[in-house]
Length: 116
Image (cartoon, rainbow, N blue to C red; front, side):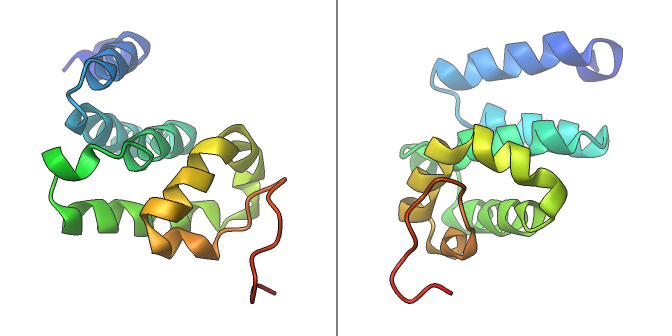
C-alpha cells in the first residue's frame, strides 16, 4: 500500500530492510517496481538481490534462478546499457554466482574466454 502512495519512501524502506538482513525485501521491491513499470528500479532490486551471497539461505534457489533469467532478459535491451554500467560491479559478482548471467556483456569487463 505504501508503494502506491509514496513509492520513493517504500523503496527506501525495503532497501533498508534488505540491508539489515531481510534479503527477500529486494524481491518485494522488484515485484512492486515491475507492477509500477519502473524498469530501472527492477534492475536495481534484482542486481541487489542476486549479488547477495546469502540470498540462497532466505529464498528458494529456483526462484533466484528465475530472477537471474529475468535480469538477463531485461538487460539484453540496449536501452538498459546505462544501468549495466551503474551496476557493473554487482553484475560481475552475479556472473560468478549465477552462470546464466555469463551471457551479459558488462561494460568495462575483460572479454571472457570463448565469448564472441
